[in-house]
Image (cartoon, rainbow, N blue to C red):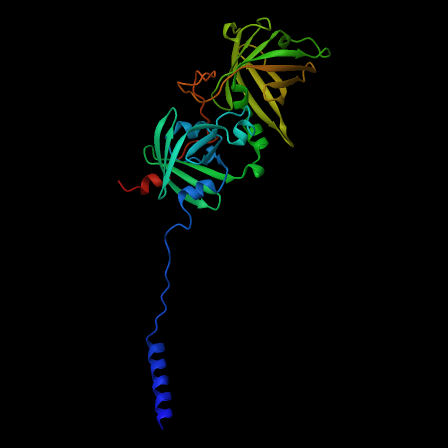
Length: 311
């Protein structure tokens, strides 16, 4: 009899607890990793300049092809020359950073302090929103061993041409018909994007590039050749003269080849006066006298975050 009462009591207790049980789902809104861990999860962050939203400009992001965050230091590839080799692929140090919550503070060596709100868009894309100019930059993460340095190099070849104070003609093929371009010994490509100003000089080779007399000016354009990433077209539009058309190929980081189809002449030009795009007071290297900022290949658009921002 006592055994039956005990079994009934156990059954009743189990029923009461079952009937009162309510399933509660708990969600953790906290990020699974810290911002600093997120920034360090990729060695290279490619700055996809064409995805930029907003009408403002953050200079050090506008000039960088890649960014890297390592042990509190910020690195960037600001130049196409040396891309993939400078700093073992990370580029040069441009400042320091502090990452906390989802806020990134950057202390740039030249531009000073900038702060960003960070949004993780997907597994390898982050958004850097600058509340001071309502502009967002989008960075895509890669490891050095799977980052396509060649694509970035050739996709931005017009910046490569701008990274020397002048290009000196150092070779002309023996074959090929005589033409007016035979007299041009120096070229200079000024910054301004994919269609910019160039200058040419007929001064004798071997001259100090700072003392060149520029005989002609015009605008130039660089184009793609279908099926060949590494071969480009170069058009020099001389004022009051006919255009000169070339096939442009890169021999190395300071030498280019120009093939002139009209005369079938091959020229080689060597870069003189390398321009490193980081202007610091304590550097002994030659630096840019004018600012080089990457330009978007489409019109700027309003940043959606601007309208949703809490003032």
